[in-house]
Every structure is written in C-alpha cells, then in structure tokens.
Length: 401
Ligand code: NAI
Image (spheres, protein in one colour):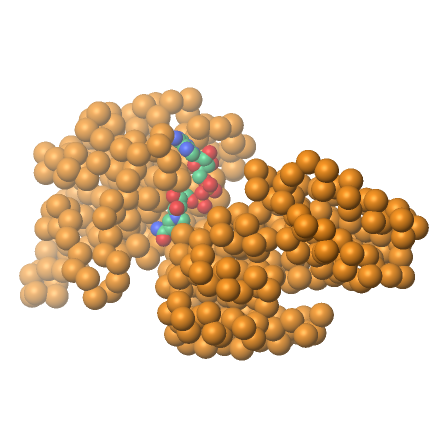
C-alpha cells in the first residue's frame, strides 16, 4: 500500500498532502496545471492524480496511463476530465461537491443585510466622496420573510442561519424535504414569491430550472422585495430582472453567477445589471473561501483513502457507487470489468477452482462497466487476482487487504 504514489497539481491545499502521507501514501505536490504532454510524462511515475479546475485530463492522457487508479478533482466541477474515457479504463473520478456549502450560505446572509441597508451603493458613493446619510429604504432583516427556492445542502443551511437572526423562513423544493427549525414548506413557487421579502435561489442547473425566474415570477414577487442568486446563472432571465429593478418593483438584487462568465480573471466582465441601483455583483465567489479549500482537500483525500484502502467508490461521479464495511479476517479483491453477460460466472469459477470461500460479494454495474468487490477467505488472494486479471473482459483487478 505504501508504494502508491499520488501526484497533486495546481496548489491543492497542503492538508490533502498531509492526510495522504499520514495514510502511508507517497505524495508530490506541484503548483501549476500541467499541459497535456507534461501530464502524460509526469503520470508515468504516479498511480493517482489530484487536480483542480485547470488541468485537462484528456482521453489521450488516460489511454496512455491505464495504470492510473483514481483521479480526484479538488473542486466541484468535473468537466475538465474526460469522464467516459476514465470509466472505460476503470478509473473512478471523485470531486468535492459540498465542501463549500457553508461558505455560500454565509455569503447569502451577508447579502440580505447588505441589500436591505444599500451597503453596495453607499460604499461606492463614500469612496468617491458622496455622503448619503438617510434611513429611507433601509431596514433590519429581523422579522422579515426569507423565501428559499431549493432546500438542499445550501438552502437548508441558509434556513438555519436566517432563523437565528429572527427571519421567518419559507421554502419551496421540487421534492419533499424535512423543514428545519420553524421553516415552513410552500406548496407552489408562486405562494413563496407572494410573501417573501427576500428570495434566494439554491437549485441546480437543469432543464426545469433554466429561466425559472423571469418576468412572470418577478411580477409575482412583493413590491420592494429582493432577489439573491448564488446558484447558477441560467436560472434567472437577466433582462427581465433588469426591468423589474428599473421599474422599482424589486428594491435590489445580489447576483454571484451569470449566464456567461469570464473564463479567467484576465477577461472583462460585462452584464446588463452593471450600473443599476442597489445591485451587488460578485464574480462567482459564493464557495470561494480558504475554509472551503481546506474542506475540499480533506474531502477528496478521504475519497482517495477509502477507494485505495477499502475499495469504496461512493461519491465517484463516473463509476458505480459501492461502499462496503471492512470484513476482518478476509481478503478483499476489487475487479472492474466490461459489463457483458457471463463475466461474474468466469470470476466465480476461478475462485471455486482454487477452493477459496467467498465471504461476501457485491456487484454494481452501469451501462459500460461492472465493479465487483469480493471478500474471500484465502491465503492466495494475490494469485486469484492475477488469474482474474487475465480474463479478456477484466479491466483491472486489485487486492486491497
Ligand atoms: P443540492 O443538490 O443539495 O440542492 C438543490 C435542491 O434543489 C434540492 O433539494 C432539489 O430537490 C432542489 N430542486 C431541484 N430542482 C428544483 C426545482 N425545479 N424547483 C425547486 N427545487 C428544485 O445542491 P446545493 O449543494 O445546495 O447547491 C445548490 C446550487 O448552488 C447549485 O446550483 C450549485 O451549483 C450552486 N453552487 C454555487 C456556488 C457558488 O460559488 N456560487 C458554490 C456551490 C454551489
């Protein structure tokens, strides 16, 4: 086990390296995002790769490095990895989808207060020498109603924080969710929009959520209410939002995500919302905190540990998810194979010919591969793995303990 070598690129948080070294792995950390050819060469010496969002893991890289055991994206998105090619080579790809939940929730709370005190505009004006001291239109958030659309990881955290500041919380979700604290479920989106002083969006980007908030929905919102979007840019029709703000039906908004976002910090950002009163614009920083980077480092390092040491693939984005408890006294074999009829029979016949006893067996499949975790009583587990590996439809076989 200690021989497994892990390469972490793109300045992944040091905590990941520390945790993986504690587990007995050999870890190297490099600061930059290697381009295709460099990555190709580097990987010859490593069995596991950790990246952030800038390193492209292409089909060519994966096909030239079929010895790779796993890839970890120390971020949320995984489209920088050719997931299909990784699957075909039997390589699970992990990410850290929820490590920045709290960071987003805190930003939303800050934005509610900022909007109701016009902090953005007053700060900008003070910087250019204008003194706007007035209470008109400034309100406390205490006692107001917050409407949360999408009561998942982030939405439910916002709910708890908002209640502790004295807001009344209502929410709408497309599936049944347990309300936390005193939050109340709304049966329709319209019911929520009608009564909320603040509306905050926490839905994923799907066909159903595309343009979910447009002219009709803004008209249904309370006069003088506010919109916050830190979910995905496609959820809001920006032109309709601009209209609702300019007509003063909405009193302001805070937007962190946009239908089109600059690809890097060097690109110029343009939006029809620029220059509109009481509009807070942020460059998709909802989840960008040092704590989130730390938590991401821990989350993906833990996924590596679980996969490399016990074969657990739970949380892998491209792979059948299997999570079995450790069985003491048995050896665990992992096998990835092409999902075709008869493979399991071939594997079992190797085991029974060797006279080994199968203590537990779990098979999970998708349309391309089968992932088999097998606990056997045998002093020759490595020999069995070598035999199974020789099967023409085996992609990879490994003994983990
Ligand atoms: P989640 O998957 O935990 O929760 C999403 C919730 O939305 C679920 O409860 C789901 O049932 C509900 N939902 C889905 N479709 C719906 C519909 N049509 N109507 C009502 N409810 C619906 O997701 P999580 O982690 O809470 O993330 C929410 C959003 O925040 C995602 O879009 C994610 O991409 C975004 N995000 C943004 C970040 C930023 O930096 N601004 C950072 C992290 C996440």
